[in-house]
Amino acid sequence: MEKIIGRERELEKLSDYMQSGRSEFVAVYGRRRVGKTFLIRSFFKDKFDFYATGIIDGTMEEELEAFHLALVRYGFKGGKATSWIKAFDNLAALLERKNRNRQRRLVVFIDELPCFDTKRSGFLHALDLFWNGRASWIDNVYFVVCGSATSWMLKNIVNNKAGLHKRTTHTIHLRPFSLGQTEEYLISRKFHWPRLAILQAYMVIGGVPYYLSLLDPKKNVPDNIDALFFSAEAELEGEFGRLFKSLFKSADTYMEIIRLLSTRKEGFTRKEISVTLKVSDNGALGDMLEDLEQCDFIRRYNNGQNQNGGIYQLMDFFSLFHFRYGAKKVTDEHFWRNHLGTPEQNNWYGLTFERVCMWHIRQIIRGLHLDTIAHEYYSWRSKESSPAVQIDMIIDRADGIVTVCEMKYSKDDYSLPESEYRKIVRRMEVFSQETGHKGGVQATIVTTYALKDNMYSEISPVAVTMEDLFGVTGA
Image 1 (tube, rainbow, N blue to C red):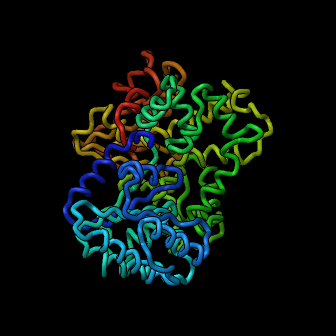
Image 2 (tube, rainbow, N blue to C red):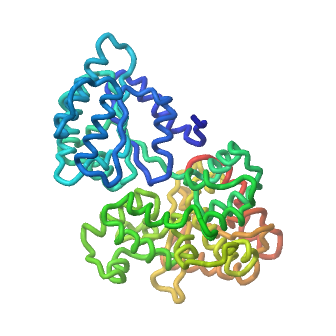
């Protein structure tokens, strides 16, 4: 199989669990297309004692048939089960037989687990009985389950309150690649792009491995984007709907939330989402927002250290691009190339660069050499000033100093103009006044290349650049 790129931390965990000397129940979850199945199949080199995968939108009969065929493939000789309790009983019998005089691990992998849980099928009760009553007693079972329907995985496996409560021994949340991991992946596929080009592609499709695999090393970034989104047979046409329908059973409301969040850079409060979309501000809305956050589509930030309420902001690059351009059904097959250098495209890159920086907060902290100092980071929105002040990234240090990060995308060294200098000064002043902060407040410019030395650059004694964003792996 293809070499695994950028998943060193997850591979180390899987290896540690393998050596634990006890039965393990590992749940791997994350958004669709992020590489969950590839990670597990590559780690175990497809050497499973049982492997089955669910059928998307399959009936109970079809799911049981698929499970039975997998049992037969791995040596089961009995008849097909008509219930999940019997199907898992068959699996337990197969494993117990394989375990006789066996020293190595018994590896069981069930992929797309949520698909098996059809309406009134009793699947979860049967899974509970299988693990608690049979499999966990075989002390060398390594049981791995995956699922793209993240909300189902979190509710029914990771945070289950019934029979499977706290039965998973480990969970792995597989996230999209960082810029550094994306660069490593593209290099492995014979790309020779400079880092600015990688950054520009990242601001459109993010670090989702499947989307990155669709890029053509023989084309530049604009031509790749045109091929994926605007050509006559664009590979990602219709992907937004497929993506959400594979993740959530009531996909339409989730898509409406994402559409709404795409319209405002600073995000919406939960109450604002409820009022605008005319949906009840109840537990169901809270669950949907949590699902989207766990799938890495959105982030929730508190207004400073205040834990009340929260503001939700769209962080998924593919979704941002879809609603800005893809959903408009552009007919120009070379739309992105034909808009190179236009204010519209430059504004897009400027907006999205801020999201890239927020996704790489750890790298920024490392670039500022603050990783050895206790700190908190958050976004902040003023409540009293007019016009309101929004600060996307604040690093609050234990030594009493607050660092206000200003993100500026540029295709060359960035020269801070007087107008931006004044805006930064005002943001710092409003922050100090409204929060009552008594310590120092500093500014840091985060940009692509260098910060040019001029009469206003002194406001940022240290600048963070694109090199820092690429420098440390991990989201």
